[in-house]
Length: 476
Image 1 (cartoon, rainbow, N blue to C red):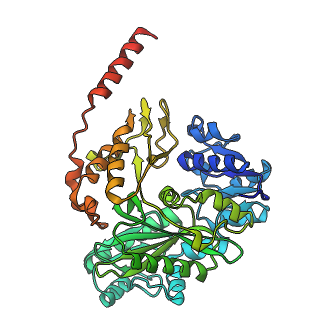
Image 2: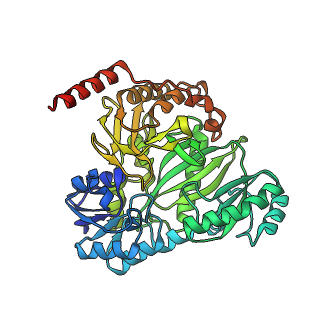
Image 3: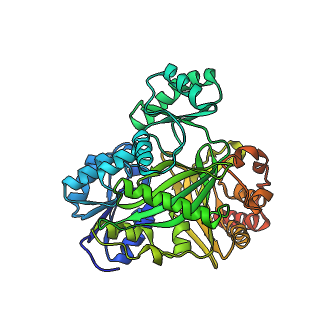
């Protein structure tokens, strides 16, 4: 990739995605600047960046101040800011503040972030572009009575959604008028607290759909490309757990159709940089636009794995005003990749977060295995952030081989000191529905028995633990 104007970049995030961005900068010859809270002083991204700056204050809010972050970028001589995912990645005010200070924001323009972050505006834009959308309210709902009236027209079940929502929050399914009235104020309250907006809209509930999303990337020269789709149907309470690229559930013609919809969606809003267009595929094989995420996704490694394209480097290049390094006809895919979100949670206890010290960590490896993480032996997982420890991505030539590699990768991994979702994923990969590549968004809910695994330590784990205890007792 050619040299360009960005020489120094502020990583406005933490954890594994911050490490990922630092690595991309290193390969591009760009100096990286990390930020961290007091609780993150020993984090891996702080150790790997060229520079790191402590932000004092509340452990969570220090990553959420657009004014302070934009000023820090300017003060440290950064040409650009990469927001990663979460935190300020879809905050149009942050993008605006960076632009005012002459700092490249590695993401779309502020007006695009604002427009696509408003789910009602996004629906209207898609309808104008001819992209199919789920039947729903014409705009925001004034009150519970308006919600009931709308539901009577489109039919139950319905989904109440926060207009400015994202990440699976601010969503409630309603089966009847009573449930709708009861949930309306709850969604309004959730929306106000999580997104600073009380606006709510409604969509018809697509029952047991497949969740299919398409990775797109566009530059400022009019080039828009898709990098094929991902299947995110294995999720719990609208939070993704396992992601697959390409979807083993689509035909070639369906793949072509949904990717064309995604490109049309991006062109309709003048999109620039990387983004994801999300769709629901119903039981009749109809696609419906759900939302556009105007940022890098957690699951981007599976797309990188099947295409060979470094999305983070392309993001930085596009933000610097460069053209995409490829054309659509040059984008190919090979094999199947699966990503497992390794969360510090206890599936046996309703996925209760399991924060604490990692007493031992062995990373999986070998052919077709990638692990993106921000953890290490001795690292203390703080209780202030999400529970993601890392992302295991496996690749193989076909679905069945990818499942086998996934089982091996999960078995290779060892994380002690906290509970994780690793043993739960082993159970999922052995289920007949997964093996047959026939699953939808209801899979996790329908199979609670998969949390009934044996979590007793293996002989190897016991031997290591005993050896560690002996060493500690001897004071070695």
